[in-house]
Length: 236
Ligand SMILES: [Fe+2]
Figure 1 (cartoon, rainbow, N blue to C red):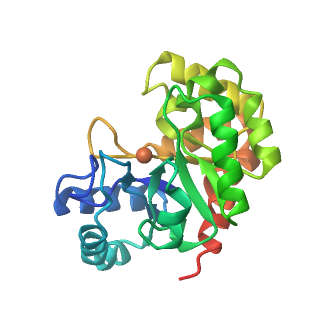
Figure 2: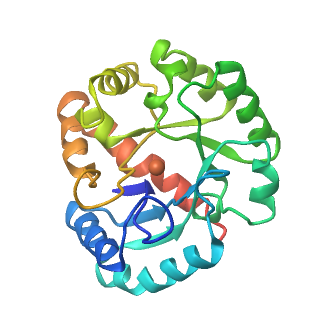
């Protein structure tokens, strides 16, 4: 499997709190059959700074530990959408996913569909492919999941969280995530794991559930081939 959304880098956001926890998370990912991980610390203006020096230092210090476990790690960022996004991506202030064509875009819970569409347009016109992070957590999509198809028609990809499908993020989010799956509106499932306890990586458990309910072809697409396309777009 390929996980394109996780917070395993220590000390840079609300994810892993120490190098030791990062290493435990890498072992856990390897044991689940994850071979490629894009690490995506938060960038959110006024809240998470995405300090490039600290991010790069944590990344470099974990690179060998990941390799020893049979996991390739790539840089990335979960970008909380704002009006400086394109400038921040172009300048390298925040990286795209695996430094390729895709941007993991996080929207606020209460953002309107017009705002979402405008932001997607901005990214697409600048040459990026937006991946909507945990779309099931946006109220706009929860009210009408068919709007996700409009986003896909524009060229965006839809990511949903393993924990949402498994019901670990509340019953409302679970219901939306299941609706998205049922209507085949998701492109990628990722872990969005933050630690080794309350927000652990549950990709394997979720993949088995999706395979049981929708077949192995769907599971393969959502957990492996579609996220692999993102890694394959890497310019590294
Ligand atoms: Fe996240």
